[in-house]
Length: 421
Figure 1: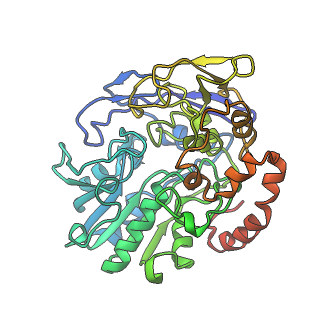
Figure 2 (figure 1 turned 135 degrees about the vertical axis):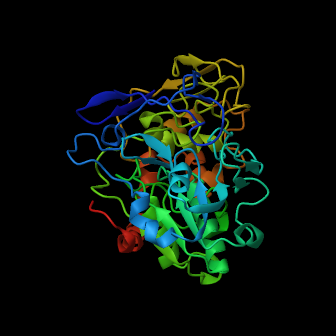
Figure 3 (figure 1 turned 90 degrees about the vertical axis):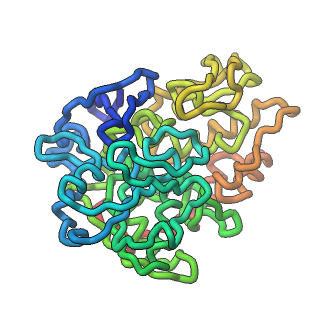
């Protein structure tokens, strides 16, 4: 069940989703651990629209770009979020839709979490074969993160269609970078199907420093960058961030009726541990706990809505839970141990990165427990944030150190925006 919230509107969206429709041949497990086996028919205007908006957001339909791909050999970068609405208002996977239009697809490329969106964060995903269509699925989160020349051999055009959430360490934009780079090297045009960014309403956080570039962050952007994935692709190209300043033959299929400051509810969770709108909103803030010893709800059905650890003071952190192995988190931090923490599932929606939870957890962690882990700097994009927290700098003062960098980023960002603020 997906719970959506705007300032004045509360409603429930129920989307029972069968991955068999998107060619996986088995049931899925939702955020409450329930097995599903049918597809609920939902009108696109009900589930892929803004709240409180008369005109629904429209994601480009195949008819909009059919002339670019007709009679061409197509490769597609997709996962379980790559849905389009048919004439009946039902959600159908883009691959099934294109095949029904006699488009020749020869390969599918899948990002982190795999084509079915079920693999753990960071888990290596092997190449596979689609049981419904027989199409080869090439993993871009296994031995390769970038399509090889052999992978692209014979392909005449590539389509990228994956739902992003607008956070630098959410790795779908890193996959986008490598796909753009591979297409540029092979002189293959790339079409990016734009989708709304549910965290597009603000820009915040430290800028990634080049020496900390990794798959968790490849570009000098803030933690939250306020752009759709199509706009982001234009920025990668325009700022010449690809290797050797390569230029990709890029076409972005824009959204209709989209305004970045209006709430948007996703019709399906974008990855295993972002089960609903609240988790997506809290993710930029609680995601920083990924580089610490604190559990951020993995191993529960409240991922990125709670956080805790066994050693936190239960008087200050009264919420109790026990992380256990579950789909998307086979080995969560503090597995099978009682944790004390906070439940943020009813917290007002954020329009900034909340550092106070991180600072307080650090200050309340026993001195003999190592708080920061090896990946914290990769998540933060800088070593300064850890140093600032260790030096007892207040959240407001830390935020002030970001201001000039964010101001400079906004000048870059403004060149690539496709939609009204």
